[in-house]
Image (cartoon, rainbow, N blue to C red; front, side, top):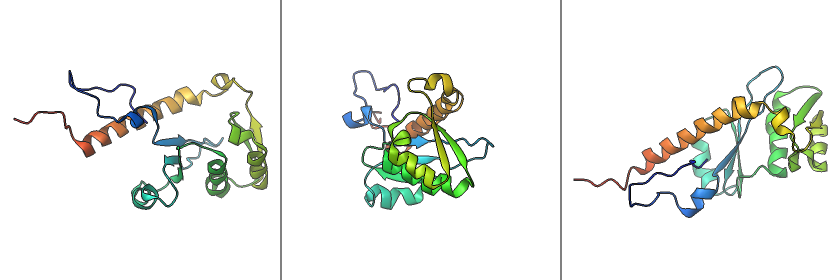
Length: 168
């Protein structure tokens, strides 16, 4: 996740390229079952399946989560199907109800049919009402995003150093 503010030395320029300022490198999907069990986070990473990020970086990412490559790091229908089969279907047994927002891949015929194959019923929340029905956005997602942003900035600072600092 890109930082909210870009700091630079007075008179200098920000270190992020134009593409990095407005594009996410990854999307994180968190799922909370009713029993409070911890499920893997799905990270949708910007890149091509079988490409350099997929073959060189993903193998060294922390284990225990689910990583999928997508050209724009978006959770599209294909990514949603992978999550249903590779994360939820392996960890949730029996008939279950998925309470989901009205995101296209969640409520599309293909998404609902895939969920039904796994014995999941889909209950979409009313459109434009997620702020009323999703307290997790404030209590869990906001702190999670803040923490991930801080880690991302720290990683960039450690891996790239500070090129603007004059050495004397």
